[in-house]
Length: 498
Image (cartoon, rainbow, N blue to C red; front, side):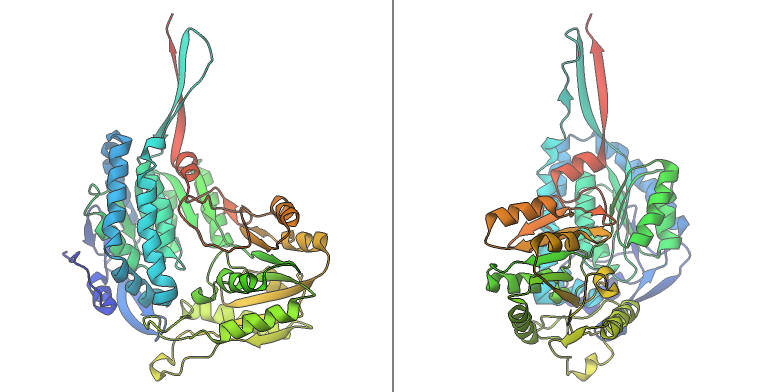
């Protein structure tokens, strides 16, 4: 089945061209059963394409092709693999506008503030990892003078990668680029809510990579994800998603005794001290809460602890800034804030807003304004919310909402606010805002999180080791460390020279 790789800037036309297809063993193909499910535009609720309802039979084909291709791929010199992966990044960079428009269509993320940026980082991630191929090094060990003792790093084999819908391009790139450079083959299970853009990326990459090395399947967890994790020829699983599903993946992988990388979400604290630069802290809170992504981020700073002396000013200034942001059609360049991904997530976010209203002592502050365009009436738009007057023990401050709902909590004692920030099942990200270097360094040591920043709130970037502790998951991504530790195994070799 032929779908052109020429750049297509009409996302509706491209969605239709990709409708009903996986990319497996070097070619487009429908699910073996012929079954499909709808892919909807969350800004309008309208169906824009179908996706294949992949099952075990489809997984078997993809993994068999990957296993065959991986054996030859692993024989290539590492730098040759790196050059090909970097070339994928270069080719993808030519499609940034196309990919940005398509991801905006299927996820509801605004093109200007989110989707175009994600497409750019996608390309950069492949270029970055391509350049790390020479770092797949072993060691020599001074074990005995008459023995040459060394270690080498070898690929694990076929990697199963399961990605979510919130930043599917970035998260697929972090997993696939590292795995491929290390000499593995990759089979991706896309998120059922956002299968189109990652499918297009797979097609583009297959113009560079050997056939079968990199495949993608659309489908649901029980029918597609589970068979991928359980497949006997899948030797490593990397998963990003919910804690509940992560536990299921972990148990299934444990039955096979294979390694797993898990990134499972967060309820990230942001601590704003009395001496903080208010302009930077306000901008950091808006960026950190990921309001332009509708709060649909694992690292969202959804618990903001503000010193009592500046609490009211901080809330007022955040309100002023977010009120000026435009909610609307994700494909409109004027739009700052798009939509929630799906009706199910929409209902979940609304239920937490209701919970916040019912929380004793809470005050709800509604930000921005709903779109006025009648064609968006059925879209999953939710105005951002700030809840004040709550405690760190309230459910809305403890459970991951994955929506534009932020809790602002007063504090006065530094030791107590550090304890409150750590009083969470999660430990993915944290930030502190202060001009006091001693206080900042103290906080970075004491905060229980895998990704801690001072006076900034950057999203994940190539070469910044990323991953959490506690219920936020296992392992690191986006760095040399992740490639070496999670996509290779170390072999010890001893040569007796006597």
